[in-house]
Amino acid sequence: MTQEKRSLHKLPPDGGWGWMIVIGCFFVTVCTRAVTRCISIFFVEFQSYFAQDYARTAWIHSIVDCSTMLCAPIGSYVSNHFSCQVGIILGGVLASTGLVLSSFATSLEYLYLTLGVLTGLGFALCYSPAIAMVGKYFEKRKALAYGIAMSGSGIGTFFLAPVVQLLIEQFSWRGALLILGGFVSNLCVCGALMRPITLKEDSLRYPLKGEQMENEANTSTQLDSSCSPLCQDCSHKRLCYCTTKEYSFLLKPKFVILAVSFLFLAYGCSPPFVYLVPYALSMGVSHQEAAFLMSILGIIDIVGNITFGWVTDRRFLKKHRYCCYLIAVGLDGLCCLFLPFLTRFQLLVPFSVMFGYFDGAYVALIPVITGDVVGTSNLSSALGVVFFLHAVPYLVSPPIAGWLVDTTGDYTAAFLLSGFSMIFCAVLLGLAKMIRRIKKKPQPVAVATSDIKQEIWTNGDVSCVNTINQKEV
Image (cartoon, rainbow, N blue to C red; front, side, top):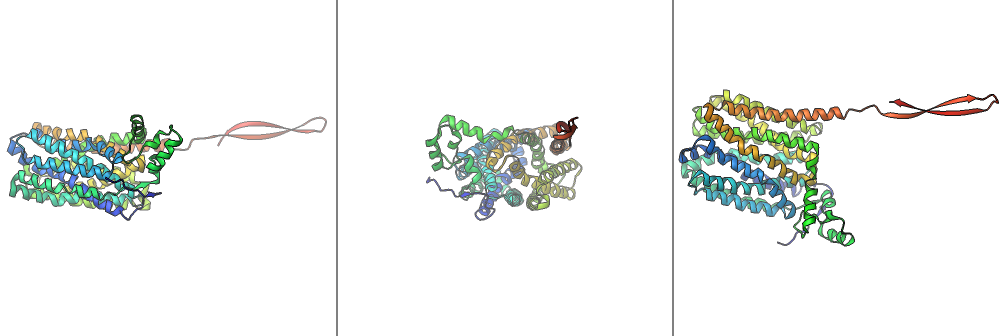
């Protein structure tokens, strides 16, 4: 591929082709996160066809989520060292292939490999680079741009949930997976929209190729001049140094605390999406109504994405995005605590509304909060790490919830554990913020002042004696 010339911008353009990037990221979230959510609609079909229990069937959804998040650093690496376009197009091919192969499944283990690992790897190559590209193009309207882009998850769920249910009824689960494979191949088109951009901040950390050659001619000690987001020829030592520079944010205390909180957040947010439809069916709700609950959750998710993104871009709230994020996570966890007590369709609808809204609200702010902590130039690598941290909780939370359902005979323990996990995430971040504020309070500072004393000698001369006293101001 011919190497493209990248225009140098001092600041993100906050518009122009950036809106095409937002549209591309929107459809990436439709084809990745919305499709992942809709896999829960296949849950009952897989369970009945393969005659397996809740825990073993739940591993399919867990492995998809885990592979998507676990391989996110690979997506960031491909985006940084080759291009975002290459990563997303390659991911689209892998994800589509995984879904098509899944339509020929003969066992759950087959689905673990194709639908879980292969499709999840394809999603990983698409998801984090697309999100990072939005942050490259926007600064002043970053939260709004992310709100629109991330709303693809909700809009996709709203439309895909009933469509997938209809496809299952018309063509069986095999035909539905085959059609989804064709749909997901549109990720390749989304990748073509991701036009590269180089900011002044990036050029200081990753010089362009011409500048790089000049620097290398002048001195061989400037190893960081060999780093570039483009695909370039680097020696082994320089490549290692580049990688170290890219992940230097891992030592920041603020990022460490944020990373720990993501572990609890990821554990809590997954089970409601996996078990909402099976729980509704166990309460006597029809299949169409259960799928409609997912549609409601998806459409309200959009409202949360866009409204929270727009509101937190306002001047009076821009400095308080962190607190808005905490509130959204805490209220989402509170919704999970009430879910076991909702036993009718009329009561489950308000849950879908509330849970969907706050889920969309905090999801839109995750890249914004991460960017505020690590900076725009490190955002792609940081998002790779953030999604990587989601991997293990996404992997273990649905099977643990399924084991609790099999053991206790109902969903109460599973949903309560999910809710408390999300609330603990909000409490942890809130305590960390309070501790930082306490440490930032001004302390007394010692200032040297001079007192001048006059001494009159017997001969009439006047001499000044300076004495330095330490006074606290």
